[in-house]
Amino acid sequence: MQHESYETIEVPGVGELRARVGTSTLELAGAAKFWHDKYQSARADGFIGGVSISAMFALFAGVAYYFWS
Image (tube, rainbow, N blue to C red; front, side, top):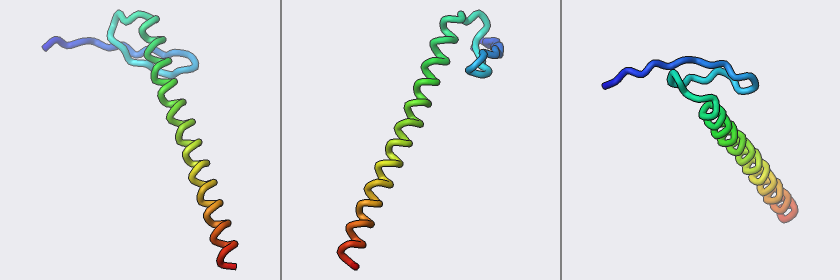
């Protein structure tokens, strides 16, 4: 099994990246964009899901209050 050496690179606006020695800047930029987009979309999806569930609960509570009052 071959041992690969890694280096840590600080990218402004992204943070610290760890990559194999000799990895091109283009590869690092593509990887950083991929992970950034993945986590941004997950955060947005979670927010939209939370708002939707809250709105449905509020609607149900309003209907229940109307019928039981």
